[in-house]
Length: 119
Image 1 (cartoon, rainbow, N blue to C red):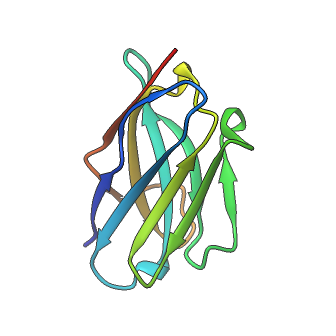
Image 2: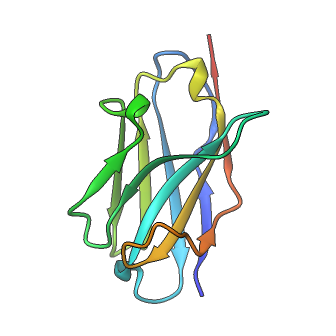
């Protein structure tokens, strides 16, 4: 069982930066691929980024490539999403999620943190 708690959301101006954190409880954090997702009002949840257990492989939604960076600190059981050059269309509730191995089906989800980008 893994519990995930996101933090770092808030209000930021367009062009600004924000770093989200997701702290995980439980054992063997390194065995989990961690993902970031977001859901904007009236839209479906969409995948944003993911990072494998050892941190060797990262992937991104095309619209955030070059602006967002996912990383993790396995000693702290924490995954991060550094968001730069933020745009109003990045406004959403951001969720982190965990899946065992490299499965694309995520088993554990956090409660979400709101990011609002003002123009």
